[in-house]
Figure 1 (cartoon, rainbow, N blue to C red):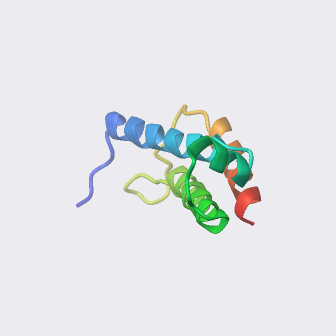
Figure 2: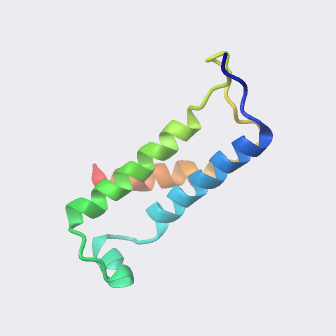
Figure 3: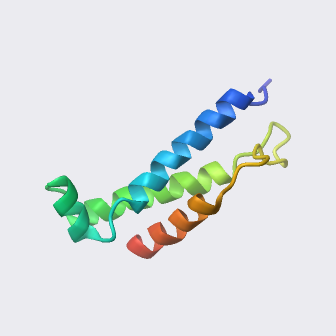
Length: 93
């Protein structure tokens, strides 16, 4: 039987969400990404990276306890995550 996530596990998941927020917010557009990183990625590859991170945030927000109904989240602020989801979707949509 599955066990509930510990508070340390939940904190680690929330921290990982912050990493995705950082990736999404790092650059205003593809040109800024190329200038900042010097990457040879194409715009399509950059958009795919933004999409993966945006979807990651949506998945994390939806995490439930073992009961399948109750959110694992308690007092965490999702302001930055919600804003990153909106920004990310604007990039790849």
